[in-house]
Length: 383
Ligand code: FER
Image 1 (cartoon, rainbow, N blue to C red):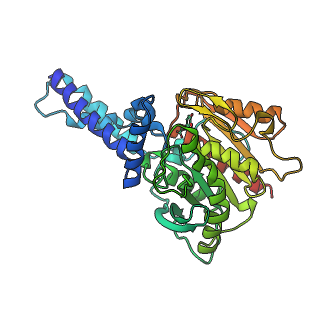
Image 2: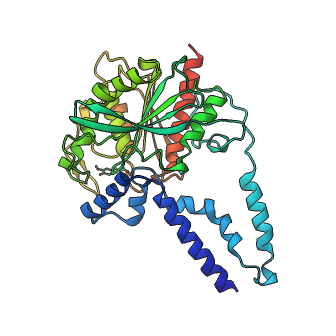
Image 3: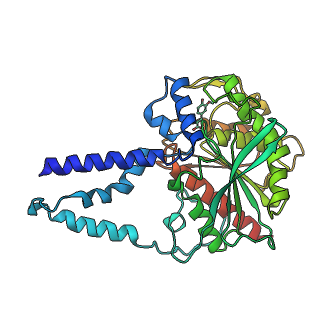
């Protein structure tokens, strides 16, 4: 019996794992990106592949789905295994139970973990829906896509702040919207429901700003250039498009920027280059390459020299500039910490924190976004 149970569990576990990994590939482009990854790199482990772009970490995700395995135990199973039934009831009800809404004291303290009551799908909260749009990019000379999450009840009568959220390497505009495991929809909706933030629009661009439709990302300098070119597409094409086609509040107080990994790296770069545009910023698990270095993937020529990694003298700096990373990040390691140290040495104000036990994964993404919104809420409550 035990063998049968283990085998069934293993098969179901494998199926769940595969479907979780497929979550970020709902569109053809996502699959293409994975294919490209296979073709372009022979140094990346299977585990690393899953985590690029979206922060899906199958090892971290697996325990969350294990309770379902128990449901596959056949009725002919040995009676001695009865405790499994109890476990099942217990785990299922625990999974369904809505976490108590924690009494939120709105202060500016960083919390390592996003509380469960913010990642949870609450029955009394209506969440926004993602949709897809396109804009003409003068920078790239072509039509490009973005995903947008409008709050429930979005109305032209109101105006909303906007968060631009940048994906990881090999990602695209579907990387965040295609992964329900990141709980971004829930975090933004729950924090707005609790009045920590205003109803906020989320825009997820395609960060690969190339003018050659055949160019694809890879771990070499030339293939990474389009990521560094995204600053031009964002500022000159996407932001003006969003601002004239959606009901948004403009100006740095209402324009936020965040990104994960490669998106975190570009978040820091864009913030240092154009600090007057973004009032609230968070770079999560930022990838190497802002300054020259060689890591396990490639040699980076760097976007700037180490002593240039700072805000220009007299620049308007963001009200909040967070840099964070998991303590167990297996992809970018201590690069985010080195960015913090460089900024500190160069006298550029920011908040640095580590997420204990988090890898290059959704836990880090949830923590970064939660803390960004909390800091926004606190900062705006003082005004
Ligand atoms: C690198 C290490 C990590 C790199 C990019 C990454 C371009 C990005 C990882 C991700 O986006 O998940 O050396 O070089």
